[in-house]
Amino acid sequence: MNNQKFLNRLISLTLTIQLAMPLSVNAADNDKLPEGWLLWHNYSDYSALDSKLHLRSPDGTIQTISGDFVHAMNGYFGNSPEKITFMAIDPKADEWDIFLYDNGEIVNLTQNSEFRNEDPKFSPDGKNIIFKRGYWSNAADDFVYDLALIDVETRAVTMLTDTPDEEAMPCFSADGKYIYYAGYTGGIGSIYRMKVETGNSEIIFGESGINAYYPIVKGDKLYFTTWHSADNHCDRIMCYDGKEIYPLSINSADYNCSDVCPIDDNKMIFSSTMNGSYDIYYSDGRNLSPISELNTDINELGADFYSYAEYLEHNTVIGDINADGELTVSDLVLLQKWLLGAQDTQLKNPQSADICKDNILDVFDLCLMRIQLCGN
Image (cartoon, rainbow, N blue to C red):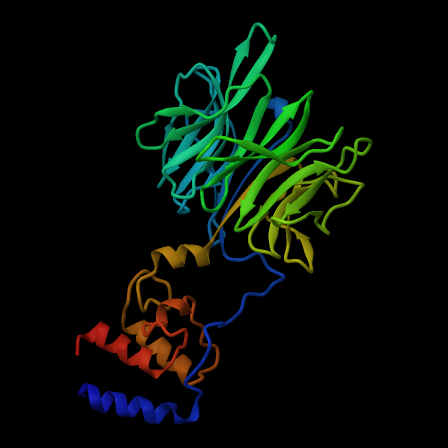
C-alpha cells in the first residue's frame, strides 16, 4: 500500500473519532506513589553503624547498595537513576567518605582524604557533588565543618567556605546559581543561601532557639525542616516559595515530620514518627499513607525520588509509546488502536507519540510513525 492510500484509509477511519486528543492520557492515580526510582536508608540506631541504603526500581524490585563500606545513607540521584551519590564509612580509613554509584559500579570519590566527608548532593548538570567536609580542630576541641565541591571526573576538591561555624547539608538551586545549606551557631541551625558567582550568603530562615536544617530544592521551591518552637523540638517541614515561608499541612506538634522529598507542588515523600519509629510516607496533597512495603520495625529515612516520567523525557526513543526502548510495529499498532478508541489501550509513554510536536496525538502522528518505521 503506498503512502497516499495508507493516509486516505487512516483519515477515513478517524472520521468517527476526535483528531485532537490531548496528551493527558491515563492520568496517574493520585492515591498511589508515582512510578519511578526510590532511594532510602534504614538503621536501628544512628550510633549502631548499621545503616543500609536501598534502591527500589519502577518494577518494584528492591536492592541494597553494598560494597567496601558500612553505614551507608543519604543517597541522592544525579541526572539519571543510574547515578547515585551517598555517604558511608570506609572502615579501612576509618572516615566518612563520598561514594558514587554509576550503573552498578561503586567508587569512593574521597578515599583516604583524612577528612569527614558527608551530606552529598549532585549539581544540576551532574558534573559536581557538593558536600560538607570536616576536620578535627585542637583549638576548637571539636570538628570544624565547611562546604566543599568535588569534580566527579577529576575528583578535584574545591573548598567553598572557611568559617569557625558549621556549614552542612548543602544543595543546589534548580538553576545551579545558588547553594542552600544549614549554618549552625551555638548548636542552632539556620537556612542560608549562597550565590555561587560571588560566594556571598544570606539567611533565608533563622529564629532564636529554633533549629533548622536539611534544605532541599524542587523547581522554584525550597523545603527544609525546623522545630515547632524553642520548647517543642518535634520536627516540621517548611516551604519557601520565594515570597513567604509556611509549614506544610502534614505536620503535627506531636511527632516528627522530616527528610522531605518533594515530587511536585502537591506530591511528596517524607519520614515521620507518627507510628513510633521513623517510617516513610507519601502525600499527594489530599491523602497521606505509609509506604508499607518499605517500612520495617527500624527507622526509614533519607528518601530521594527519580520519576519515570523524567527518565522517559531524557531517554525516550521517538515513537516508543510502549516504553520498551525501541520503535517497532507494536508501537504503530498500539497507537492505531488507541486512536480508534479500543478499550484497555494505554500509551505508557504518550509524549513520544507526538511526532508532529504539536501537543496533539492524531492520525498525522500515526502516518509519520509508519514512515519512520517502514521508510516509505
